[in-house]
Image 1 (cartoon, helix red, strand yellow):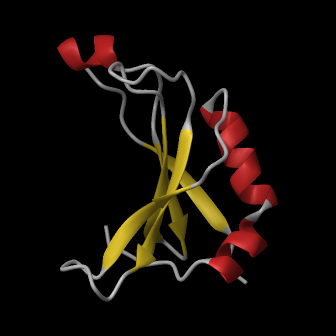
Image 2 (image 1 turned 45 degrees about the vertical axis):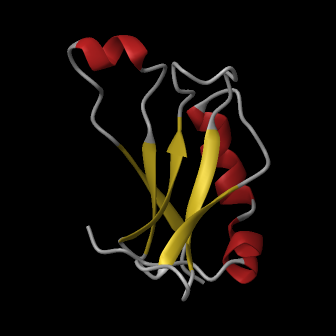
Length: 101
């Protein structure tokens, strides 16, 4: 079974930096994008980080959709550790869509 890897996205600059509460990360599997870890958004009432995966959806025009995990996290590092700890469960439960960068 392949392991998940993570790549931090570049920090926001200019006015967007004021709205950003952290640095998002891409989740990859075998070098292909399969999900993301997102910081809280300025317009969101919650201060929690979210993990979302791209799953195969034959009824969608794009062939995939996002599914957001119910679990919320205090920061990006906590979210990454949770994904690493549960990677076998995630890979067996979800049919992940592998997107080229």
